[in-house]
Image (cartoon, rainbow, N blue to C red; front, side, top):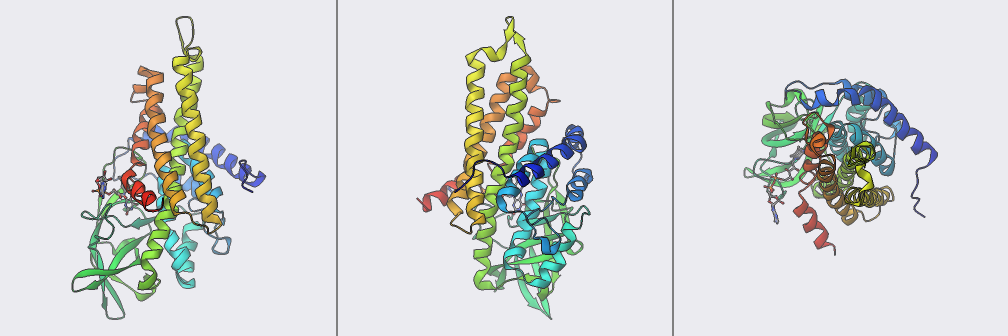
Length: 378
Ligand SMILES: Cc1cc2nc3c(=O)[nH]c(=O)nc-3n(C[C@H](O)[C@H](O)[C@H](O)COP(=O)(O)OP(=O)(O)OC[C@H]3O[C@@H](n4cnc5c(N)ncnc54)[C@H](O)[C@@H]3O)c2cc1C
């Protein structure tokens, strides 16, 4: 049976994260949204690291919390409801860790997972997208070739979350065949070996760092290559499939924050001598927002449940990402309609939610890519 309510342990974790973030991160949110690209502020990551919540799926044997995907999604929703940029840092890190968790050997797990859950602030990056290869992931130019005891990596990755601030990057690249990439594999590259990082200025999730990464004759040891060429593409697909549901959880958090703020405004703002909520023209959109958020949340939970059961989660995860993305954008836009000028004020949190929500129609594959995946599985 699938429960539609949280266990006691889940409730405790969620309220712990909610309380700590509300007191330590929420007061910083406007300031974090306005930071310059090069000035990454570690304080919010420090808060999460203290709770051992940067990558809560890391198993306990490596020092992590060992949370399942459903509980991880609950935590991500809470974090996103306060600061979606911080939730993006988490999800970027989890993307980087999944290939190691699923396909890495024991040495790689000890070397790369343990420092990330040691209560010190640390992040990781997952680098797939390239200037020429976005939706078309068969079109990657980044490649590696044998050199001495290890490999040499060349290529450019773009729009990588945590790119300039991560301890290491899990890079998807092809084994070089006459200068063209062959079968894909993941290579783990410590930050100090990246040739150059160029920060991207993004419209939303502005707390997080997003960067272009240049790899030029970058040395990678054989201990830093994950898995086998025959399973590399499967590992990539599994990582993307799991990541999509977690991106959906970010959207649910953003939408919930926008909805809650708007509901409370509508109940207190008076026009024509009564709260604007008493007009159906205001309360009905709020009803639709609340209903859509619940539906999106349940879709995220379903996908995460299937991921935890090792079931067939590809379609459910793409549906969760697609629908939650649409809900996030619908809810944040309507929230501004309902709050009027107060919602349009750039000093309001709604302005941040509105810009943050837009990114989730792009990351983890655009909406069209989700539709292509779902269509292939209908
Ligand atoms: C803030 C941010 C953070 C990101 N973080 C990461 C990260 O950490 N790691 C990473 O690897 N990548 C990351 N990305 C990159 C993201 O995954 C890509 O932007 C996304 O996959 C789309 O690729 P693209 O931007 O190149 O768009 P394109 O692939 O060029 O697509 C452009 C448009 O064409 C449409 N389109 C393309 N092909 C088709 C088709 N066959 N049928 C119908 N429509 C089509 C798309 O839907 C889209 O609307 C991030 C992006 C952003 C904006």
